[in-house]
Amino acid sequence: MSSWRPTRLRTSNEGWLTSYADLITNLLIFFLLIISASKMQNGKIERIVQSLSTEKTASMTLAKAKEDIDKILKEQQLDRQVGLELTDSGLEIAFQSGVMFASGSADILESMDRPLNVVLNSIAKYREKYSFAVEGHTDEKPIRSNHFQSNWQLSSARALIVRDRLENSGAPKNRIRVEAYADTRPLNLTESKNLSHDEILALHRRVVIRLY
Image (cartoon, rainbow, N blue to C red; front, side, top):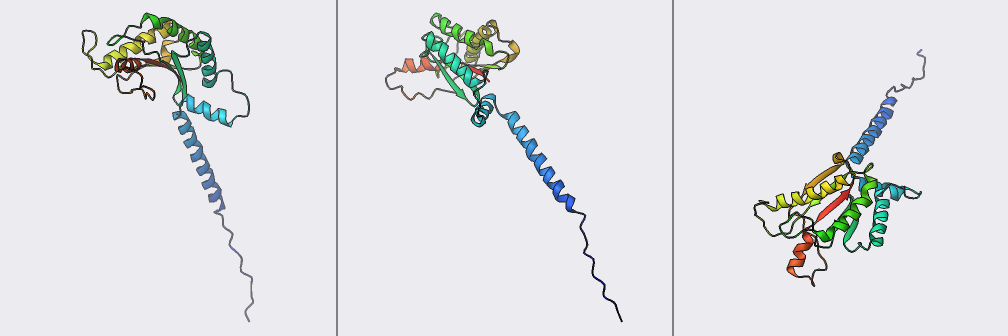
Protein backbone atom coordinates (compact mmCIF):
# COMPACT_ATOMS: atom_id res chain seq x y z
CA MET A 1 0.00 0.00 0.00
CA SER A 2 1.55 3.25 -1.16
CA SER A 3 1.55 6.29 1.06
CA TRP A 4 0.68 9.75 -0.30
CA ARG A 5 3.10 12.58 0.27
CA PRO A 6 2.31 16.19 -0.46
CA THR A 7 4.29 17.63 -3.39
CA ARG A 8 6.68 20.37 -2.43
CA LEU A 9 6.35 23.57 -4.46
CA ARG A 10 9.57 24.62 -6.02
CA THR A 11 10.61 28.08 -4.99
CA SER A 12 12.28 30.18 -7.64
CA ASN A 13 15.60 31.82 -6.92
CA GLU A 14 15.31 34.01 -10.03
CA GLY A 15 13.27 36.79 -8.46
CA TRP A 16 16.40 38.89 -8.12
CA LEU A 17 16.58 39.12 -11.90
CA THR A 18 13.49 41.30 -11.95
CA SER A 19 14.97 43.72 -9.45
CA TYR A 20 18.28 43.69 -11.31
CA ALA A 21 16.56 44.44 -14.62
CA ASP A 22 14.68 47.34 -13.02
CA LEU A 23 17.94 48.69 -11.62
CA ILE A 24 19.69 48.51 -15.01
CA THR A 25 16.73 50.20 -16.71
CA ASN A 26 16.72 53.04 -14.16
CA LEU A 27 20.49 53.48 -14.54
CA LEU A 28 20.14 53.60 -18.32
CA ILE A 29 17.44 56.27 -18.08
CA PHE A 30 19.59 58.22 -15.61
CA PHE A 31 22.63 58.21 -17.91
CA LEU A 32 20.49 59.16 -20.92
CA LEU A 33 19.19 62.15 -18.98
CA ILE A 34 22.74 63.18 -18.09
CA ILE A 35 23.83 62.94 -21.73
CA SER A 36 20.79 64.90 -22.89
CA ALA A 37 21.39 67.60 -20.29
CA SER A 38 25.06 67.89 -21.28
CA LYS A 39 24.01 68.67 -24.85
CA MET A 40 21.44 71.27 -23.81
CA GLN A 41 22.43 74.88 -24.03
CA ASN A 42 22.26 77.18 -21.05
CA GLY A 43 19.28 79.08 -22.37
CA LYS A 44 17.12 75.98 -22.64
CA ILE A 45 18.27 74.51 -19.33
CA GLU A 46 17.55 77.73 -17.43
CA ARG A 47 14.11 78.06 -18.99
CA ILE A 48 13.24 74.48 -17.97
CA VAL A 49 14.50 75.05 -14.42
CA GLN A 50 12.59 78.31 -14.15
CA SER A 51 9.35 76.70 -15.34
CA LEU A 52 9.68 73.95 -12.72
CA SER A 53 10.77 76.19 -9.85
CA THR A 54 8.31 77.79 -7.46
CA GLU A 55 10.94 80.16 -6.14
CA LYS A 56 11.91 83.55 -7.49
CA THR A 57 14.36 83.73 -10.37
CA ALA A 58 17.97 83.60 -9.26
CA SER A 59 20.01 86.78 -9.37
CA MET A 60 22.35 85.53 -12.11
CA THR A 61 20.41 83.92 -14.94
CA LEU A 62 20.02 84.78 -18.61
CA ALA A 63 16.44 85.87 -17.97
CA LYS A 64 17.62 88.26 -15.25
CA ALA A 65 20.44 89.46 -17.50
CA LYS A 66 17.90 90.27 -20.22
CA GLU A 67 15.79 92.19 -17.71
CA ASP A 68 18.77 94.19 -16.40
CA ILE A 69 20.25 94.97 -19.84
CA ASP A 70 16.85 95.95 -21.20
CA LYS A 71 16.45 98.40 -18.31
CA ILE A 72 19.86 99.94 -19.05
CA LEU A 73 19.06 100.29 -22.76
CA LYS A 74 15.78 102.05 -21.99
CA GLU A 75 17.49 104.41 -19.57
CA GLN A 76 20.08 105.22 -22.24
CA GLN A 77 17.34 105.48 -24.90
CA LEU A 78 18.97 102.75 -26.95
CA ASP A 79 16.22 100.14 -26.84
CA ARG A 80 15.30 100.88 -30.46
CA GLN A 81 18.86 100.39 -31.64
CA VAL A 82 19.67 97.23 -29.72
CA GLY A 83 17.44 94.17 -29.63
CA LEU A 84 17.39 91.46 -26.97
CA GLU A 85 16.04 87.96 -27.42
CA LEU A 86 16.23 85.00 -25.05
CA THR A 87 16.49 81.77 -27.05
CA ASP A 88 17.51 78.17 -26.41
CA SER A 89 21.00 79.17 -27.58
CA GLY A 90 21.30 81.95 -25.01
CA LEU A 91 20.68 85.67 -24.72
CA GLU A 92 21.14 87.34 -28.11
CA ILE A 93 22.04 91.02 -28.27
CA ALA A 94 21.67 92.39 -31.80
CA PHE A 95 22.29 95.89 -33.10
CA GLN A 96 19.15 96.73 -35.03
CA SER A 97 19.89 100.20 -36.34
CA GLY A 98 21.24 98.98 -39.66
CA VAL A 99 24.21 101.33 -39.46
CA MET A 100 26.71 99.12 -37.65
CA PHE A 101 28.98 98.94 -40.71
CA ALA A 102 29.19 100.57 -44.08
CA SER A 103 28.81 98.29 -47.08
CA GLY A 104 31.96 96.25 -47.61
CA SER A 105 33.56 97.55 -44.41
CA ALA A 106 34.50 96.02 -41.05
CA ASP A 107 35.01 99.39 -39.36
CA ILE A 108 32.38 100.19 -36.75
CA LEU A 109 30.66 103.44 -37.64
CA GLU A 110 31.17 106.28 -35.20
CA SER A 111 27.44 106.50 -34.52
CA MET A 112 27.51 102.94 -33.12
CA ASP A 113 30.38 103.50 -30.69
CA ARG A 114 28.14 104.59 -27.82
CA PRO A 115 25.52 101.81 -28.20
CA LEU A 116 28.29 99.22 -28.41
CA ASN A 117 30.07 100.56 -25.33
CA VAL A 118 26.83 100.58 -23.33
CA VAL A 119 26.17 96.94 -24.25
CA LEU A 120 29.72 95.83 -23.49
CA ASN A 121 29.68 97.55 -20.10
CA SER A 122 26.27 96.09 -19.25
CA ILE A 123 27.32 92.49 -19.92
CA ALA A 124 30.71 92.78 -18.20
CA LYS A 125 29.43 91.45 -14.87
CA TYR A 126 28.31 88.18 -16.47
CA ARG A 127 31.80 87.25 -17.69
CA GLU A 128 32.50 84.91 -14.77
CA LYS A 129 29.42 82.73 -15.29
CA TYR A 130 28.70 82.83 -19.01
CA SER A 131 30.62 82.55 -22.25
CA PHE A 132 30.21 84.85 -25.23
CA ALA A 133 29.78 84.24 -28.95
CA VAL A 134 30.24 87.08 -31.43
CA GLU A 135 28.41 86.50 -34.73
CA GLY A 136 29.40 88.38 -37.87
CA HIS A 137 26.89 88.83 -40.72
CA THR A 138 26.86 90.52 -44.12
CA ASP A 139 24.26 91.50 -46.68
CA GLU A 140 23.77 89.46 -49.84
CA LYS A 141 25.93 91.61 -52.12
CA PRO A 142 29.03 89.66 -53.21
CA ILE A 143 32.31 91.30 -52.30
CA ARG A 144 35.81 91.04 -53.71
CA SER A 145 38.18 93.79 -52.71
CA ASN A 146 41.77 94.37 -51.67
CA HIS A 147 40.74 93.76 -48.05
CA PHE A 148 38.20 90.93 -48.35
CA GLN A 149 37.97 88.15 -50.89
CA SER A 150 34.49 87.06 -49.86
CA ASN A 151 31.59 87.76 -47.53
CA TRP A 152 32.98 85.04 -45.28
CA GLN A 153 36.12 87.06 -44.68
CA LEU A 154 34.10 90.23 -44.22
CA SER A 155 31.76 88.69 -41.65
CA SER A 156 34.78 87.23 -39.81
CA ALA A 157 36.46 90.63 -39.70
CA ARG A 158 33.29 92.26 -38.32
CA ALA A 159 32.99 89.65 -35.59
CA LEU A 160 36.69 89.93 -34.72
CA ILE A 161 36.63 93.69 -34.25
CA VAL A 162 33.72 93.38 -31.82
CA ARG A 163 35.45 90.44 -30.14
CA ASP A 164 38.46 92.66 -29.49
CA ARG A 165 36.26 95.34 -27.97
CA LEU A 166 34.57 92.71 -25.81
CA GLU A 167 37.89 91.44 -24.50
CA ASN A 168 39.06 95.00 -23.81
CA SER A 169 35.92 95.49 -21.73
CA GLY A 170 37.05 92.70 -19.39
CA ALA A 171 35.69 89.47 -20.88
CA PRO A 172 38.29 86.64 -20.66
CA LYS A 173 39.51 85.66 -24.14
CA ASN A 174 39.01 81.97 -23.36
CA ARG A 175 35.30 82.67 -22.88
CA ILE A 176 34.82 84.35 -26.26
CA ARG A 177 34.31 82.59 -29.56
CA VAL A 178 33.83 84.04 -33.03
CA GLU A 179 31.24 82.85 -35.54
CA ALA A 180 31.08 84.07 -39.15
CA TYR A 181 27.96 83.47 -41.23
CA ALA A 182 28.43 85.78 -44.25
CA ASP A 183 24.95 86.16 -45.81
CA THR A 184 23.74 82.64 -44.92
CA ARG A 185 21.47 83.77 -42.07
CA PRO A 186 19.37 86.63 -43.41
CA LEU A 187 16.95 88.39 -41.10
CA ASN A 188 13.28 87.50 -41.28
CA LEU A 189 12.00 91.01 -41.92
CA THR A 190 8.25 91.02 -41.41
CA GLU A 191 7.90 94.80 -41.66
CA SER A 192 10.05 95.82 -44.61
CA LYS A 193 7.44 97.22 -46.99
CA ASN A 194 8.37 100.81 -46.23
CA LEU A 195 12.13 100.19 -46.47
CA SER A 196 14.25 100.73 -49.54
CA HIS A 197 16.47 97.99 -50.89
CA ASP A 198 19.57 99.72 -49.49
CA GLU A 199 17.93 100.00 -46.05
CA ILE A 200 17.10 96.29 -46.08
CA LEU A 201 20.69 95.43 -47.01
CA ALA A 202 21.93 97.66 -44.18
CA LEU A 203 19.87 95.74 -41.63
CA HIS A 204 21.71 92.55 -42.54
CA ARG A 205 25.15 94.09 -41.94
CA ARG A 206 25.22 93.29 -38.26
CA VAL A 207 26.97 91.67 -35.34
CA VAL A 208 25.18 89.66 -32.65
CA ILE A 209 26.67 89.10 -29.21
CA ARG A 210 25.31 85.98 -27.52
CA LEU A 211 25.60 85.05 -23.83
CA TYR A 212 25.34 81.30 -23.26
